[in-house]
Image 1 (spheres, rainbow, N blue to C red):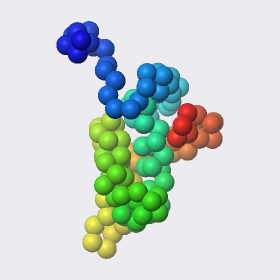
Image 2: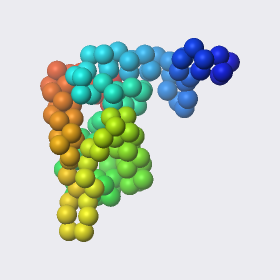
Image 3: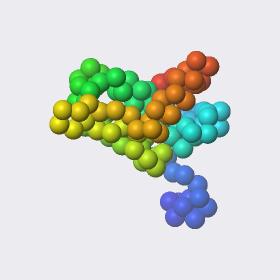
Image 4: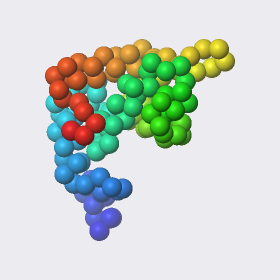
Length: 126
């Protein structure tokens, strides 16, 4: 069955995402600004965008993860997946004496997410 699905370019469900959640993610991606479409390709994409947005004001990923009550590994993994989906770095990580900050693309992504929120199109559970 897996080979047949792969041969016909049919995505397989992996993890806990349901078929309904996957279809909702596809619909959300179609409505999204072009800059966000590649980031909204899975059922948990909006969660990753929300975490990315929430982490921006903090000086480090560790500080952001502590504020969210999650592990730094989880937050970094979510941001890394978002960066992988988009094909570019979104955050310049903190270095000695320098806080993390968004890259130029990260700033554009943040602006697009804010614009979608104003229109009620992004939420962690939509």
